[in-house]
Each structure stands twice: as structure tokens, then as C-alpha cells.
Image 1 (cartoon, helix red, strand yellow):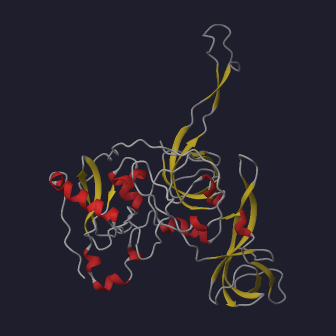
Image 2: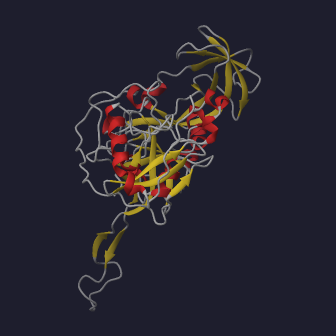
Length: 413
């Protein structure tokens, strides 16, 4: 069935149709539609009755991966946000045509000063065949509903009208953050969560008269779950421990990428053929399946609970962290953190001596004076994309200053 034509809106004429959009929106809520543009009624299970919602009424997205991670419930202060109008970005357009390569973060930043308020302004248009998904070529526009600015999809792309293109439309929908920026990090196991390590297969021995394995060798593997022949693995050497600076507990390990291979014969032990290696593979090295489930379809939003943690690791061990680098934080599902949550990064203020506290008299000393800690300064923004019980992975989506290990991560202002 062809899609029904959408009604075109702009700021100039949208007041005349605000009642119509309000009725449409209420009908969508009654029908159980999520405000999440990536939600698919046929593919996504209905959220549980206990699902969190914001005080302003915006529906919160449910992450399928976080729901399967081991979660320990602890008491956290729940944040209550005052209902208010969400400020638009400077020079926010009346309309925006979605481009190939866009992410939801890009689009939200185009319309809003604070992109994590996107769930509060997104307004689904049920006249679009898939009102919850956004595709390249779609036209998003600002409309006014009951005096508040909202963003809605006013015209689906012609690409979606093509019967041939309907075969795999979900794979073409825009993602929340750039997939390629985090896929290599997860597949190569740069950081391993503590409980994850015990569930991974490991190298038992190298086939033949070899102590070390390299490209072209076969290795015998035990542990993990049974997988079909052809399954690809990254071989990872367990590196140094990652400790939570708050209590000293080990929460994970740095992983050292060794190489990759594929399952050539199942069984116990199974056989894996090594295709490419950066260093020697030895007994005890771990195998990480390369088909890692990465939940990229979620809303950017402020956390539902108060988060106050620290960055404990960064990919490649660089000293200074910049935009689109992956970081690991000592906060996870048990703290209320979830994929899509936005956190602000703060550099700890330096400690200086106030040599002028007693005035500018003769008693002023170069080394004396009271110690004063300068205020923390905001250095960037992180979007969480995967969580375990005690750690979370995040992508730096904005860096206004250098970011370092042990910088604080907190709820956005």
C-alpha cells in the first residue's frame, strides 16, 4: 500500500493545524505508539508497565541489551525535571532534509541547544508508513502544538516508496551515533567486563609443534557457547586490571588485540583457524565473537537517576581524549545508567594557594597561603551506548577541552 501524502507544516501556518496534530498525537498514544523514532511495533517487545517516563511526559526508550545484562538494584535519587519549553538551537531551520550519514545526535543538535531533550520535542506523524523511524530523504519540520515547538516527520523519502527498497528498510534508518566509531572497539575487545571474561572461550593449545600461534596456524579452543562453523572471533590477550577508583574493586580488564580467526571445526575442543595476527597467540588468550550486538537505535536523553562517576579507561591508551573516542566509565546498569544517556565530562579543578588572602602586605609569601580548589570545568559530552552491571561504554560526541582519565562524568546541566 502506498503511503498517504503528509501535510506540510511550517512555523507560519502550523498554528492553524495545532489542534489536528494534537488529536493525531493523542490517537498515537492511545494506540500504544512509542515516541522513539526507532521503535518498531512488530520487532520490539512492548515496554513493561514499570518503564520509567520523564516528568514532562516523554517516553523513555527500552534498551534490549541493557535488559539482558546482570543488574543489581540499588537505591538512587531520582531526578525530577521541571516542565519547561525546550530551547531551540541558534538558527534552527524550519525544515531539515535527512542526509545519508546523519545520526540522531546530529539532527537533534540541528534543532536543539541541548540535544538530549529530543524525546521531549519529537512528535510522530502516523501518516508516515513507519512514523517511528527516520531515513535519509525524510523532511523534518518544526511545528507548534499548544504553544510549544515540536519536530515531526512531514514527508517520507521517495526511496521508501519504492517496493524494492522495502525489503530491508530498517537497515537504512539513521542510527543514534556513528556505528563505525565503536564497532572496531567492541569487536576487538579493547576492554572486557569482569564477569564477561569467565564466559569467553580460550586457547587450549596450538596445533602441531608450535608454542605460539600466528596467521596460518590452527588453535584448539575450549569454553564459551557452541557456535557454527565459520563464526569469526577476535583473539584478545588479557591485560591490566581496571579498578573502580571509588572502592578499588576490579570491574574489568584492558584487552590487547592479538588477531582474528574463524571456527573451522566444532567440538570440545573446537578448532579455530587464524587468518591475521598482530602478535603471537598463546594458550590462555581469549576469543571474542566479532558479531557483537551494539544497540545504536535509542534516544539521546538525560539519565533517569543522578550519575556521578569517572572515566577509567580509553581506547588505545591515549593521554588526551577527543571527539568520537570511546571511553569506559565506572558507572553501569546498577547505577541506573542506560544506552542513550547523555553525560557531561568535567575536569577536576586544580589546587592553588591564595597568597593574597591576608592582603598585599609584607607577609605575602611565594609558597604560603591557604590551599584553594578551583571549580570543575565542563570539557565535553558523552553518549552511553552499552552498559554492564558496573561499567558503561560511551562515545565522546563533543569535546570542548582536553578530556583525561579520572575526569568526572555527571548528568548534563
